[in-house]
Image (cartoon, rainbow, N blue to C red; front, side):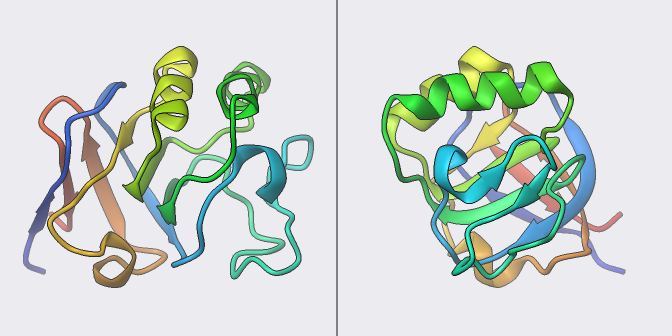
Length: 136
């Protein structure tokens, strides 16, 4: 298997490796997730019913307002959180929320990251370098 590396904008958090959970949908921590069950809960979302816990969550664009920051923090404190959040574009509130929650985040890739990564692939997220590596 060949290694693929995608370059994005450096973000907060530590380097982590995990299984990708990918959809081209936009992302709201407040309205798309059931924080108690640890699943995607918005009926119209492509990942509805799937667990995001312990996965590298890869989605399109951050949406939502100030509640996102404390929602991400609540996810981390409850232990029902993705290992990292990867977005094509994170708004300033999502970036602030990820930093507040100590949740690894990378955005602004050179490609549409939701089209080049598939659910189930193992990926390594290195926020300091701004890279997402697929494969060995």
